[in-house]
Image 1 (tube, rainbow, N blue to C red):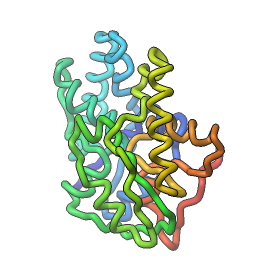
Image 2: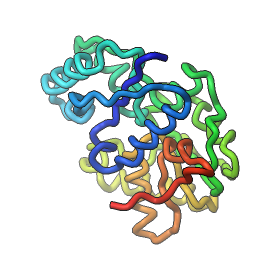
Image 3: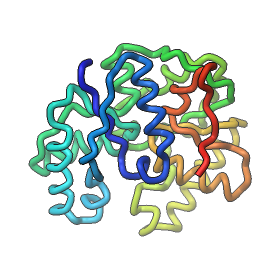
Length: 239
């Protein structure tokens, strides 16, 4: 793999930069050279989902121009990868080969043991776009099962939505809150110390609820777990 570009996503770049750094560290450890094109912005999902098709089209074409020429574009977001692959072509934009992180590791690099070490009890939430739009299936779980020291606990009713859904959480706050309560109950039933997922948006939503409950469960992106080693262990990000 000669030229790999990181698409950080606007949410990760703004609020969770540790996830982007972890993605780069992981990919470089596996022998990939990683670029971060400075022209990248939003994938346009927010605009498209709220009816601003023209704005989304402009962002889709900017994405195409920014990432043109790379062998692969890797993003730590199933949601944004799904937008690029499924919606951008409908907006008339060419689509560079774009992968959610676990897809790239398993399908392209053909690796499940990435040399990670993470001695914590963990449960995994499969986000809606990664599960339903991308069909990543067991790939994140295969990666997690290979992490040394990690105690992986199955999440009850894992396939149920957490209730975030971008603007859905704003427009349908009561329904979103009820869905979040169900998801938090499932997380707490596992007794996990850490909740992981492939989208910071879902981790933000669920983690915010758990924080308000003072539940003691920490949301950690999949990339940060996979980047953690005995020599360079994961540490909570400070803001």
